[in-house]
Image (tube, rainbow, N blue to C red):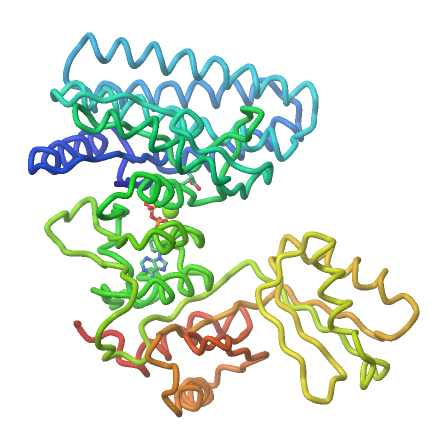
Length: 462
Ligand code: ADP
Ligand code: ASP
Ligand code: MG
């Protein structure tokens, strides 16, 4: 069971989580808990590290550390009922915060922030949350021990900021956690692992979902549960469409496409370990545990809904590559993609017009500058005449396994958008036929999502 940042947002909530875990355990389940950082802490850590490297001001660090200490001490008082345990946990927190302070001061003096130090600093959110949840469990009579991802056996490659577990993880986790399940509830930090040299890595933002799935798969668990502040996976982001409904059952593929195409509810890799081991994933609301939530399964028996959900990806940019020299010239597209891959650019969507005179590519906005530069350098001989970029765009996607082999879905999507005067800049349909995705201007994205949510009747209670 993984609990997200809002679920462990403060001491009272941590206590609620501990009680919830106790109840499930008393019903005869064996559990491992994965905790996120208290809400907002990861962002605050990253901000402090950036400010420290840019300004070199140690006063910023001192102020941040004082706030962080206060927040976590308060949480210890509110989450833990037994005095002796409050002290023990508070001491543990102080030791960790002291290490963190030294690292941040170091960054002030060095004036540089490497990908490796970003992972190290951002790991502290989860590393402060785990002792709190563990202490809270102990104080209500549940035996528990806190682990970092690395201590639990999550060993990753060296891709800081987006690390992936290596194969040995699965046997290590089993060896380290399984013996503890009979008598207690291990608490593991989400989001972080360590590489083979023992250096802390992170699995990418929102990575606690991925941690839970890795642990669940390694332990051969019956189910993997992701507890959040929403009722489950919804038909779209409720912040855009308040009438969005909970999807009771969804397939692995649909859930993956949804998260790839921007639904912030799941980390994009969170489903992979579950798929590999055939384990159902449940998404539930921490504050309404009685509500059934969403279950993600291998395949759904009957598919009533053609379209399940509408998603939007923000912070992306569109690159247009054009030039008459591209027509009939073999290998231009291959060269463009190889160039981008070598520059470490993440490509989200591509489309090539049949005239062959242009290729459009959607990339992460943070990769735009290096992408444009790499293409210009590669084609300085003139095959490509023009490279233009547009930052003010979003990708909207319509997702649903029922779309495969159902004629007319694309017609409905673009017909509805046309009627609402939403201009479509680029279109792409994955060959899986499980999604149709397209690019609109940033200003048109909200409207596009609302129009399509209505067009496919997604606001109806399921
Ligand atoms: P966690 O507490 O596990 O970190 P998240 O904050 O990552 O949970 O995920 C829940 C958030 O995702 C919600 O606040 C919601 O606004 C957003 N969201 C976006 N798309 C969806 C969707 N299709 N279903 C549910 N939530 C969504
Ligand atoms: N705390 C991390 C983040 O904010 C990981 C997570 O919450 O899943 O991205
Ligand atoms: Mg999350």
